[in-house]
Length: 240
Image (cartoon, rainbow, N blue to C red; front, side):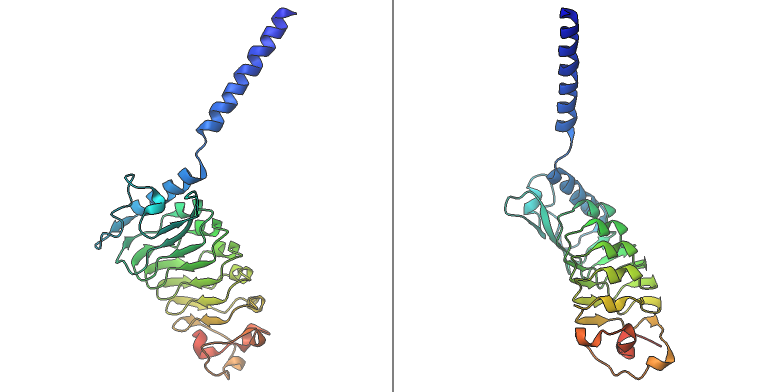
């Protein structure tokens, strides 16, 4: 009997210590986000203005240039690196920053594909990668961004069709896709975007039925004009 009790004691003790070791070895949310920021930094090959000079372990990552965290300096909420002449790719590890609310990389020289992992940033309300050198299809995973209000992908080299999943972003107020190499028709469910106030898609190779070419140019239109996508102005949208 004593030996059985002793065995059970050591059994429970061993697995308790194992659980504690595994739990303590798990990286914190802050550590995961730090690793994602380091991966973004390492994917940038040119920084002529030295904007990322303080992106090092000398300072806390919430103090890095362009980074905004919550009040407790625990989670990253915003990455704002616009007009800094940065050149490189956008690291897919950006998707590990699950608390990210704003990502602004406007007017740099980021090239390659827009990583699909951005679709994991479920709290994102604003995304701008306009005026870069990005190419390839618009990732359909952007349709997972149910809270995004501003989506600016203009002035790049995106090709292929506009993914229908974009219509799942029902909080959108601004969608800018102009000056790319997009083809095909608008998604049939685009009428779901009832909060959309601005939609720009000129200077692409989008097509529509001939019967829809009578619409005049508009730079702004509200929900009342969103009965169906055929009511959108053809020249503004880049139709041929």
